[in-house]
Image (cartoon, rainbow, N blue to C red; front, side, top):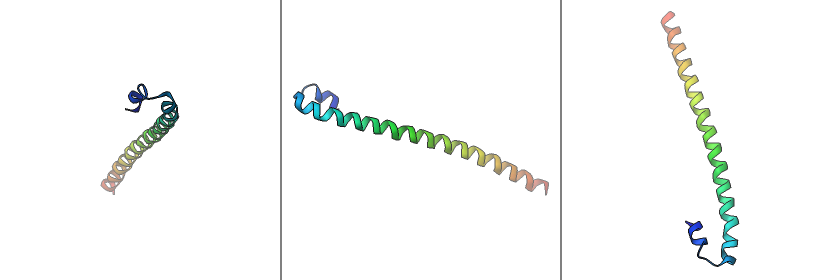
Length: 63
């Protein structure tokens, strides 16, 4: 949205807004990367939990 507006606004204003937009974009990318890692870790933990749960059920059947 602001990128489109920056094309028609005065350069003095645009030059103030551009660094802020860049900083926000970088922060969003950083948070997105952290979220992706957490999602991956959660999926791995859920898979491990299901495996252990299956093993536990197998042990109950044996004993």
